[in-house]
Length: 519
Image (cartoon, rainbow, N blue to C red; front, side, top):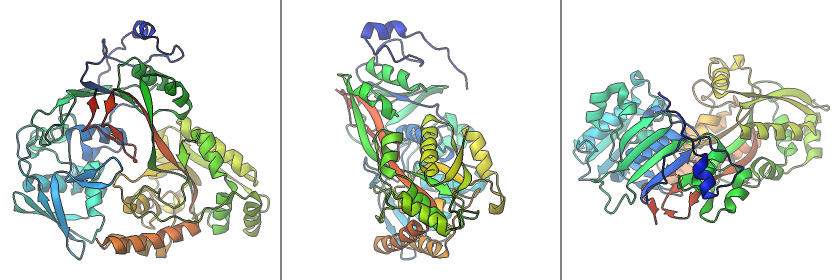
């Protein structure tokens, strides 16, 4: 990537009377945004524009401008048909037949049809392509082209969560012609069916423009959408106040009062499906004793966690998955009870507590969360050494371990959102006995055969009532086993111009921009 030099913006900010305490560190357009051009200020650079080959929510959001899947999500993350009009699943949950929308073309003029579905799904599922999201379609056997508007998907094994899974951004459709033309460079040459077409992407700026032949009548309502990467929190807020962006995220909780004083700007505060937890390595002492794990859940004041770490912009995590996720089943909370925590620790053979360490990313929020945990656990005699790490180092230390017995991880402060909107991707990657790193994300090294049986049964059927019962069983067992300290569910905080409507930050933290309008 090439980096363009920063442009001096202080004179513009001063002229507009922007809050002086907020420094400008970003790259911006020389003039205020045109009346019908939308600029979105984001915290990081994009990692790519191939939806099957990106891991981060921001890049997935950028891909949603250009691409669409057979199914997607509404602003509340409820499943909705997009390029498919309907589907049928057989009783085995191994065959899914999709009726496709007619008259849709890719930006390069290639028709969208069942052959395009076959090319896309089989491309993602093929491990030889080494796409980052291959695991989402690892269960795929083949796609049968019944006719141009009917695609029949055959799976190797039952998978009841399949439609929710392909609603994940990784399931979005790329032009087969572009795939053949650009190969691995499709990452920088995205061609989809979405509301906006690709213009350019360099280090910190993605530009797209209105798709004049978009299949949804009356949309899009803005002429262009630009993503600008502005890492510094204050600079993003200054950009919004100056009218150089109409939407920014994330909004740090401590800066919410500053934004609330701005007359032309409003805060958007929504519940998320981002669960925050501390996993404990259940294969190592002392965490191999369920009494220790339950004790630490009693030792942490979850209400204080929400207030101190998130300035009140968080809710309780009262199940292994957040309330907004499909098949959530509320559990009885572990009440904050220091005396009970000490009693359980004593029963487990740790009357004076123990020493351990906790790993996490080195960003500000994670460090604040770890320090809170350190203070809370000290009250029951548990001395925690916190080890914040750069994300690459942390990932290597967790996911380079091939055997669970070799894992050095003791406690991990982390978070997870299921971008399929379904309990399967909220539970199986994190709490399934076959999901230890490096295969999946079970950093608790937690294994309960009864939980595994329920999780596997839940995806072996497409019947929602049966799936609900299996997930209810799994969540009750996991809650009792307490492989995590269940902390909270953070809110998704963003800020926008009062001129903007129809743009949404959905519960997994992603963006929906298709219906955005500027008054």
